[in-house]
Length: 67
Image (tube, rainbow, N blue to C red; front, side):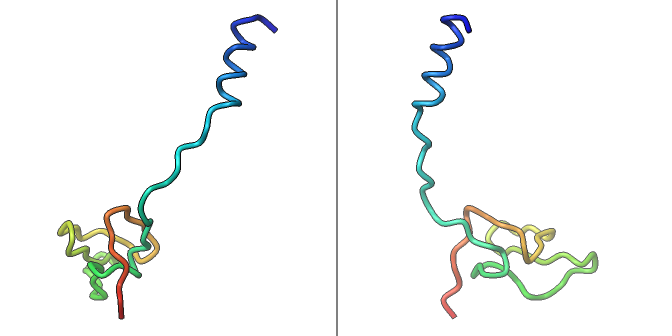
């Protein structure tokens, strides 16, 4: 193993993993999710006015429903 490779391995293996900030919300659990199905079997997201979301999709911009 070369010295460059060992330096690279040391840096990669000692690097810390960044912490996740925020909450990942499943579309069907989001307050912006519409339960009304579109013609193409997708659903509507009122937060972004997007028509092609699926119940099992995720969004980092979603907000958990409180009901």
